[in-house]
Image 1: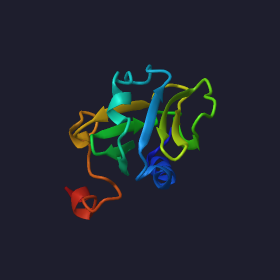
Image 2: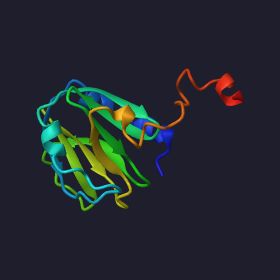
Image 3: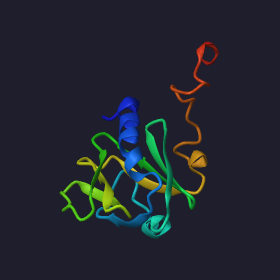
Image 4: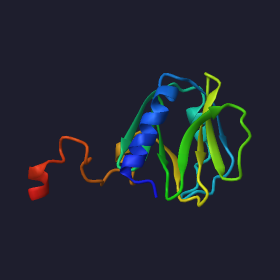
Length: 146
């Protein structure tokens, strides 16, 4: 299962490839992930410019001006950069195609991952009640003592 260090490594790996790129299209091949991929996510992201790639706990946050894609890798998921048009494998569930000719591909053999969208991601039910980030300033000795 990808744990926080692997998710942070994934974030850092995809960030230089996708930040400041415009989303040319989104292809969802299978909506049956941990939570169904919402219909309309393609139109919400198409044409948007990716402003940042963040992380909250084990969720990747792909921020645009219109909102944020929330991606969870689940137990066996991974994200990686490919050339747009690369044939998909059986476990490749979605691509975020970029204006650069590259795409962010999500692969998850067990389908425990997720691909969601929120205009206010930190208020999303999956993220709203999480504790402090272990790599953030709020996670300190005083917090642990309390």
